[in-house]
Amino acid sequence: MVTRSLQVQVYSLAFFTYFGFYVSREPYSLVKMTLLKTWAPFNGPDGWLLLGLLDTAGLATYAIGIFIVGYLCEKFNCKHVLIIGCFAAGITTIFYGMANYWNVHNYWYFLVFRMLNGFAEAFGYPTLIKMLDHYFCHEVARDFIMTAFGSCKFLGIIIGCVISSLSVSFSDKWGTCFILCGLVLIAIGVLDMFLLPSLPPNSAPLVDETTPILANKDQKDVSSTNEAENVKEPQDGTAPIIQTDGQTSETRQQENLGNKETLLEALRLPGIIEYAIHLFFVKLSVYVLYYWIPTWFESLTLQGVQISYVLSCWFTAVWGLGGCVGTLLIGLAVYLTELYGVFSTAFAALASVFILSLYWYSTLSTASLVIFLVILLCVGITQNGPYSLASACMPSAINRMQTGRNEKLVGMATGIIDGFGSVGAIFGPLSGAIILQWTTYGWGLVFLLVAVSMFVAASVLSRQVYLESKRCRAELEEVNSEEI
Image 1 (cartoon, rainbow, N blue to C red):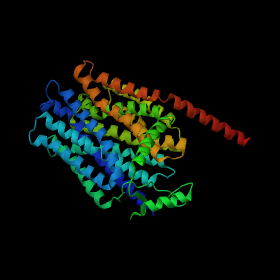
Image 2 (image 1 turned 30 degrees about the horizontal axis):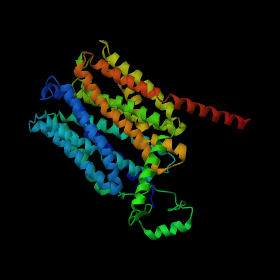
Image 3 (image 1 turned 135 degrees about the horizontal axis):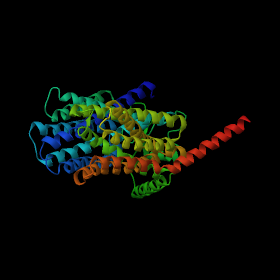
Image 4 (image 1 turned 90 degrees about the vertical axis):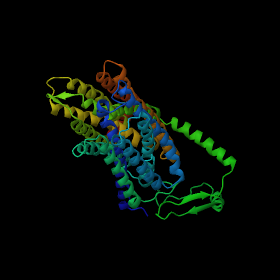
């Protein structure tokens, strides 16, 4: 039997684990200016492009890894897959930082470990989402639970920035922050090894006790099926796992056809294409700032003070704090109203305004540091709220509103929306690098790209806003008629 305390344990460890993955990612964006100034081959004329290609390579292997890890989750124990990912991501992060201690200046060294790290980072999201879906799929507040889970990303950014800023107090090497952040993720992997419950492969989401484990219109078919299958009871009290002794080629062909039909059915879900395009532009915008905003901070002078590496870390933490607040705000808003399109559009549109305001204000000679940080916080709130909502709960919400709950459609809808988002994430950092390397407009054009991307993300949901507004008016009229 799954108790509330077990749910709290799983959620806490899942939150803490994905937080650790983001801690280990943060140094890659924080040390860019240091590399551009002091470390070959990045301090040459092509430094911006070389760093952008590293980010793109890491994100590309991450996107490939997502599909592979999704398959591994269905074949092996999710807990074991997750722990391997924690160790692999932590170790590759450490080796990247060791280039500073070993005086490595070979670009291929950085490229190989950046790609290996991107692949290892992919072990976190699919495994943790499967665990959370297993334990929370029937919770009334599931949308808020899953969206709130996204705040761990930004908490990881904050702590990663703090660790990176403090590392300079006892070391003058840029590689130290990589080593420390990698060790944090490895330590979390050890913690999961002892405390995280196992989730066997092919485990079905938990169901109500009143729901039959095997539902079939013909009871005779169920009996004959049970004779050909072994039903094994897991040790952790979850729903039984059905394991078949064999599978004919005809059955496999039917399953392949079923997968194709599931994809087509998922694509026909109202709103899924719009939210997929929405997440593409949101993640493009978010990832440009995520990978380049610390470098931009170090190019600024505010109130006569040149922003240092340490201040850049703390400024980035403010942006991450905004992400935490925005994630919780939009999650609570849609939980209370179910107006997904309205709040996604409002946040994205406001983000485009705040992004342009942030850059414009930074160019003023009379710019106040306090006002600058307030605008930066607003950017984090409005930009990252739609990101967490679209990636964490929209596939399930779209499917639930249309079909009740179809497990295959949830997975397929997640793949469609996150797949589009991953493409946007890949193009984001590279776009920033190309602008900075080959144009004379520099940061101004980068921020214009980020703002326009958020505006387009808001625009593509205009039909959803109309439909949700229409639904609200109909519900309000119905309530008024009942009162009369």
